[in-house]
Image (cartoon, one colour):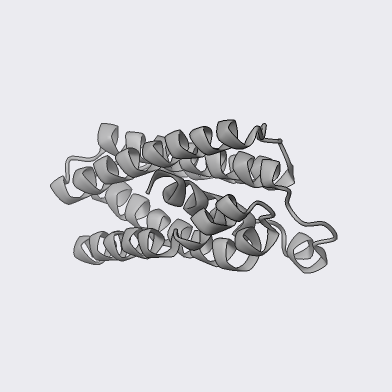
Length: 176
């Protein structure tokens, strides 16, 4: 489940790549690059959830943030165990850097909000993020994965990603 959440974040990173990069896609992501994206994506969602825990007073938002922290930390732990087992060192790449740059902008936008406006922005961000991750996993990460174990883990991520998306959509709907 941990690695699944990590992949979710990876997918989001890939989805936020500039359109020209997605169309050209001259080279595939290596397994080491996929690992880097996965860790970064999960860390970013954990940071957003931690911010929600600091800023929100809404029980539903706080519960969702708690779930995101637990699930994404679990993914980081599993991803770390897998890359150690496979002898792979995560490799920095354009997708990871793009994800981190977008995360800085998102965090700044969220930090500027408070109260119900923060809650709505956080929940909507989670909906958007998870939709992008699902698309990235299916269209980029799974096709690019070379290692059978990594590919299998990526393929098993879909149900978890969809559960996170459904939960985020429910939270966002309840906040309107």
